[in-house]
Length: 225
Image (tube, rainbow, N blue to C red; front, side, top):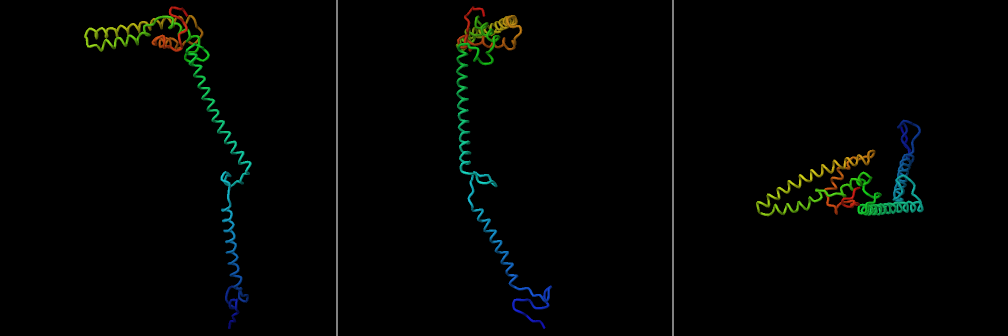
């Protein structure tokens, strides 16, 4: 016959007969676990609600107010410096273009574009500017020929077509003679310098009217460079 005691298991049951397990111990252990879990959840919730500096990197301590202010000042100074640098570059570019424009008008070698610099290119320019070139009258003659071709007269249209052929032939012959002479003179005057492209540069200049040439002519007609 088994005897039951309040707060204990019957004798003979369980793995350890003769040593009853109190019920209070079981409920106390469960309550302890629940209390620990609640405390941990409360701590996490408190940590998550704690404010954090938005400028502070994640996982790092919040910087001091003085450090944050110094960082903001450095960023502001950097942006201002970039603006000043961009403004300075624009001013320098504007001044360089102005110097180049004045050099093209006055012939100052220091500020001329790269394609116009050097004694070889200057000699080629002066050789073209010192003589009359058929090609520089091409635009005026082209206007006259165009007007004649628009007139509904057969004879005038025939004359206009003939003038086209004459002008083209004269320009080609004059360019060939000018290029041959200039190449020979450049070889005599500058034997040890780079003369590549100088003849083509001069012939392109001869296609422009004298008053429209840049750099401006520095020699008169008939003056030998």
